[in-house]
Image 1 (cartoon, rainbow, N blue to C red):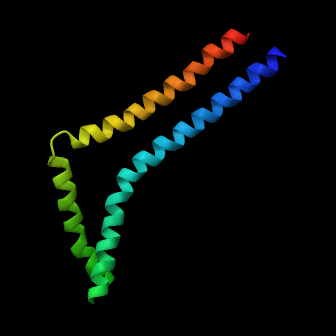
Image 2 (image 1 turned 135 degrees about the horizontal axis):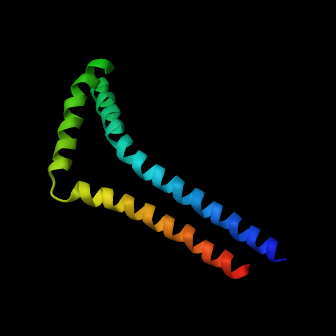
Image 3 (image 1 turned 120 degrees about the vertical axis):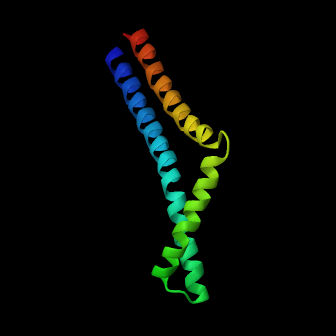
Amino acid sequence: MKKINVALVRLIQFVVFVVFTFVVIVYFAAIIFIPLDALVMISKLLSVVGINTFIGALIGLPIVGYLGKMIYETPGLVNMILETGMDLVKTGKEKVEAFNAVAESIK
């Protein structure tokens, strides 16, 4: 019976690991995809006005770059965003390691 309990704890530990890994990947991917989405939206907006999509993307690229520069120059914002992601990593690591103590207590 103890082997089944240890196996269940390890299974739940694996599920928690996968969930936290997914959340961290989504968080850092969103940091990359938000500027790309802004570029697509600007190019689509300019195509509604009548400018070709390729030309709209060329016009939108400096706009998105300037917005990124404004975010980068905002004091503490970039550090706060990255620290939040690293806190997700630390929290996930702590939660996964907490299962080791539970598995050891069962054995």
